[in-house]
Amino acid sequence: MKRKEFLQSSLTLIAGSFYSPNGIGNSLAGLHLRDNSNDIWRLSATEMIALIKSKKSSVKEVVQGHLVRIKEVNPSVHAVSTILEESALNLAEEKDNQLSSNLDTPLLFGVPFSIKENIDLKGSPTTDGVSAFKNNIASENAPQVKAFQNEGAIPIARTNMPDFALRYHTESQLHGVTLNPWNRALTCGGSSGGDAVAVATGMVPIGLGNDYGGSLRYPAQCNGVCAIRPTMGRVPYFSSSIPYNNVPHSVKMFAVQGPIARTIVDLEMALQVMSRPDYRDPHWIPIKDPNIKKGKYRVALVTNPGGYGVDDSIRSAIKKAGQILEEHDCIVEEINSSSLRESMEIWGQIVTTDIRNIFLNVIRENASADALKFVESFLNLYPVLTLEQYVNILARVNGIAASWGTTFQSYDAIIGPISAREPFARGFDIEGNEEAKYMLESQSLTVTVNLLGLPSVAMPVEISNNLPQSVQIICPSFHDYRCLDLAKIIEKNVEKFVPITPKK
Image (cartoon, rainbow, N blue to C red; front, side, top):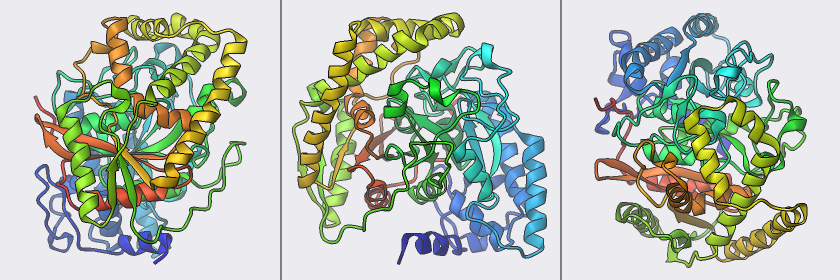
């Protein structure tokens, strides 16, 4: 069955799992959501679409159910910065009229979604999390927002992010701190922490974020949800608020747009939509996905990236993912990862050089004191480079990419941690240089993926220490769907962890 046919057929299923915090399922066919539409937030996007298309629920009921959920739980986590209630309800009525007229419905028909505040939504401010940009109204939709709306999805919320997306913790000058729904004392991750928390708590089934150094995958780990960092160039990027010719080289190299969801099928559907062409981005690539591999997958495990150390709970999750794949006819082997020290160092040197030369004055003028603490600690970890040194480091990336290419000749995928450490205590990243160094070292595998522009899926595998424990599945460039295929195998053999109700 072709991938498009698979997705379309999955949407026609009326029976499926009805998600609850403990993962217990009921048949959709037996639900009466017209009598209790507030519970619809428990469903995956795929299940919502099936419910709407079968006319067991209206689009307005789906939207209203999520609006109620946002108002119930957002005051305790502060993930949503703006509720788009009026426009969402108006769009829902339009779609219900379309449904009653028996017109064709597109792929994401009626699905509510959230949008990080550094992504353009026409008529809404693209704030980057700072007060100075609170009136920076976007004149156009970003490509992924446009694609989602063209497929019938409904923007319902804007979400919080750290100032300028430059922390692994979500706390902004404009909207304050976003709290981890599993443990309020710990970080919810960043910089797409608002979307991750919104998805984890059932405020939306899909959130739109981006990833420059783990900003999709780390919040997914902290909150027990799924995310995909696509291959560089697969998802087009454009901002009417930030002129494209002013974007630093490292952003073009490392940053991608991607979705956060509670299930791998929803993630796959979202990626399919986001990958649609948009010629405002001259670097968008019309990727034709390679054929699904025939025969056994060979998978490499990285259990201690760079040799910096790993928490036992994180190592256990990696081993569990490997064991599941081994039980499903994959060949799994552990490999050495000492080379990650160099790749992490190069990523850091490139990023800090661009910050010093392009961003720093704007950051110092507009960021909060806490955001500046992290930026200054980050800069202190890496030396000021001459032009010659910067050019040589950029050239070295090619050698690292070639080395990874050799590894991918032996293995179809690499599985390892997102962060090698459990979520840090809130504020840990701004305590000083050593704390910033410790945190960055834990992300050595994650930032290497950004350095090389590779696809990676983040997903939870088990619960330990009352926290979700996650892994990332990394594949060669353009093999995003191989990541998703392996993730589906793992997902079928683990519990469902979200949506959850935030801890008080």
